[in-house]
Length: 206
Image 1: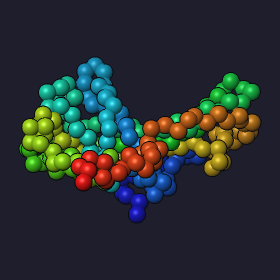
Image 2: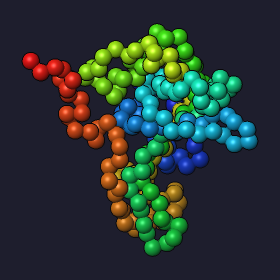
Image 3: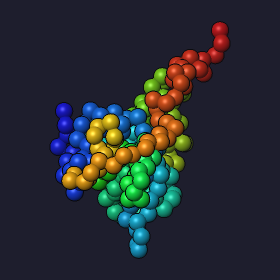
């Protein structure tokens, strides 16, 4: 079911990405987001690994760095997740472009530092990266070094441009004769070999 926070409105209506099952699959597959927090005079932006939890993004950071300090001062953040797909070229210079997927989420960050809260958060986040559950429990000492951050989504918009979907040119303009040069598949969970999720990897040999 499409969540209430998905905002389909944007200037280029032809690029609006509103297929929620596809957006959700994209967010569960991608590995890195960029998070912008308020700072003065410029936003402070950091790359983060993340787990999409349906209504929030799960991230974490050191308790002792600038990122945690800025979040404590102002919990409003913007997250960006994107994937370039191909370089597009046509005779006119203005028709040099990209195929891509992109999601922007405006969120409020909820921070947790209690040991058990951090461990629970990290166990939930690990479902994405280690669904085989081949790891030993998270130690309290490690949990006490970080802050668990749940970025609760207030508004999310998604945008894509894929030639196969007919997204060639802005409405009212002639269809450009693009040549398409795909990028090699970037980092994503679906790009890993099956043995990356072997549940027997760390079991002692009998």
